[in-house]
Image 1 (spheres, rainbow, N blue to C red):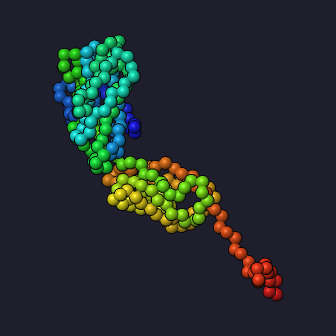
Image 2 (cartoon, rainbow, N blue to C red; image 1 turned 30 degrees about the horizontal axis):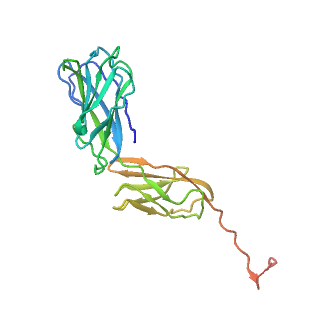
Image 3 (cartoon, rainbow, N blue to C red; image 1 turned 45 degrees about the vertical axis):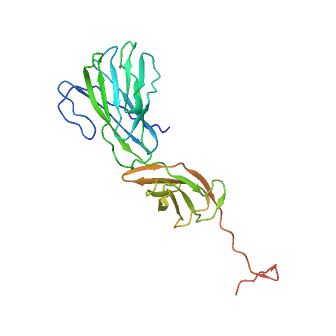
Length: 261
């Protein structure tokens, strides 16, 4: 599972009338704002992690509830701490933590919600509707807000060249990436080696323009699409020294011509 958690900074600030941008819900009178943001590639899972709650907080029986953004679903509440009970609603539309026996509920620690983004989600989009709510045992809401989920792009994969195999100065470089993504291959000095655009099946290939220098090096591919990007794993390569020029021979024998006077 891809974990891309964010910290909820200032999760229980003083009440204020200002509206928040994107999916950050504008608080009503006396309410506080909770929000978080996370980037999740299509078909992957990520974590919205609520942390840093402070100030007067509700006690036993209170609940922290997350509503998933459009098209996504909550798949887990993996909190490993006593005093709380996590639950996911059927279909994953919402999930909640309930304070059961915690001595000081919501003080310290963090509260993770695992979100899954569908495989057909478009990189760079931000599905709306993600909401957070903290309510006491009687259902009175003390804090509301949102979480901004951005659909990311998957890390590209290098399939050629193979690591550990001596290479020529301009080896064919190939791999897979999200269809339509612009792939840039860089070397150990972060210099651009070559670029390509992934085809509909995700495949791409390119060949270095300037020859790669002889000796050890490394290659890494980065994919970018609709304002989001991701870097793949690095591979170590070795470019072979160019073969020395062979002298002319006569009937298979090496000859030597004296320099002209």
